[in-house]
Length: 384
Image (cartoon, rainbow, N blue to C red; front, side):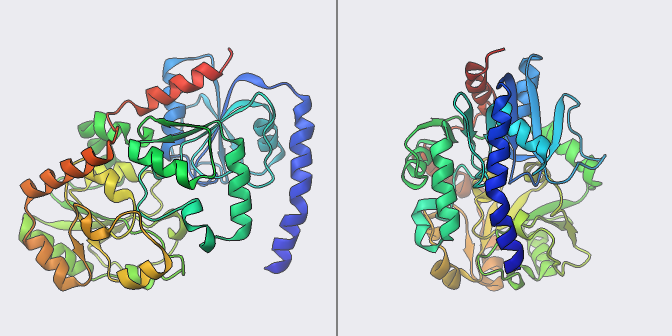
């Protein structure tokens, strides 16, 4: 492992040299390069920005970077060119694109040339767990150096609220433009709920006579996965007693741990490899999570959110939060008995009222128009 790490570090200066060599080629003024989660998926904000950009103009070249070439079942518009991560072609596209759009940090060997524009959408517009500079002492020093370097390259940082704007200003080692645009990946959740639900039901083979609860926990910094092995049979029984009908669990693990095996049983559908969690929001009537910012996204639907935080005390010793978790408008349970009690006592009218107060306080902008706002920013920076 150490030898492999050493070899990677030795290669990086050469990759930087290759990028600079490709600077001999002119910047293509209508080309936009997209990447999501370090090229692991075709999804999140970059996906929806790319697709919206193609809707409004045919004069743009969209390139999406992926570690693995997409499966046939993954629908990607034919106008989007797919480039494999860490290939010479990728380095060429990186060096000659007018605009970069990403939702995570660039690799530490990447350099930006004069005239290029870097738009950072980030992957959690309203985080719960503290991030970046706010947990600098807990971060790997190499990551901190790379993050500071990445921030210097950025031209725009995007968020979904005035609260997020202030938060990002403090924690990103960044003093450039921060735009409140909303989250492109949530546009379809707000603007086309019924159509999105039907298409996702069809794609996953879900039954309309069954109610689905989405279980979407975050990862643990210590790598612990035992915490995800819940008594799912009890969970569906509690939900059935309160909300009636037959229930099943859709399991969606964080991308960092999506290959982990969870003992789910017959009541669990593992959708951890499904590329878009927002689709899963549309088909789920309830969300169960722990410390994932998915709680804020799902709550925009006004459907119930329950927090299972069995390891809250130990988690807080490792990772600090921006909010007191008990001040959030979501019932918190530290064991199954509390979870059962919270489900039984859930009152939808009170819940919606608390949600409204919470979102108004943060001044959140999620109206289905985020993609259009960001496309407008891109168009202003393209010359075609």
